[in-house]
Length: 355
Image 1 (spheres, rainbow, N blue to C red):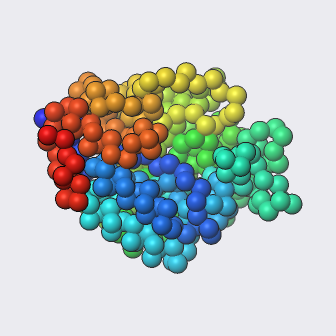
Image 2: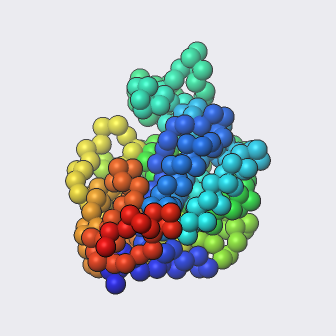
């Protein structure tokens, strides 16, 4: 059988294949609530045959949203609709996961189709937060540097988000430590110039992430996996880099993280990223090899053959798909046909299955 369609077990969770739907912001919530858009968006990927489906970046606090339309998990009232979504995903033989996130200094932004960019306080924006008061762009207002008590509350917010995700029936948690958002802002010396125990050395810059991991591990069932998404490099000299990512992955494994989702970039707007097919796969390969931890490969993976080759070369353990699975929610079913694998189709669609 093609490796792409081999089951993948992590702890007590078994994915039916190695195709994971990447967290992708939909900017379609009101006050953090999931709605029918999220049910159809996420549910159609379950019907389409993916193994693991992760929600978009789900904010652990209102000020942690990228935009005012982001999905949230900061209050109990959010649970009910998310529970119905997770239940639908599981009914269709996929696994439901949630990405917990805080946007840090990149919060208070317009939706992409509204032009993006920071919203001023006068226009209804909010004060952003970061390890240091360095704005993402020079033209933007500076974030407020987090105090030690703020950091303590931040950890508690992530834990409360994980508890609610568990109540809603999700079986995988992914922490968003990439793309220039708050956890990544602590990791990178480009955004973290603190002089206390959360800044300066590698040990100090990674402290917050490890504290969040440890706090979530204390309440998250041992039978369920915990993932972390990182930006393996900032693509800027003097920024976070692949060597530090390998070092961090070693620590994450020691602290009980099960898989590193290997993305890159997002820290500064002037980074020159060499985007191309599979351009981030070498990061997943390096971290898997050197840190001895399972990894997910992401970034312009668009065909069954490309995905299969990555797995056959042992460059990653799962394939994390974003834009291609937006274009084709049934990519896994079509990929199985392309690779000569017979997989079950939903009973309702069986009559359309290619012979």
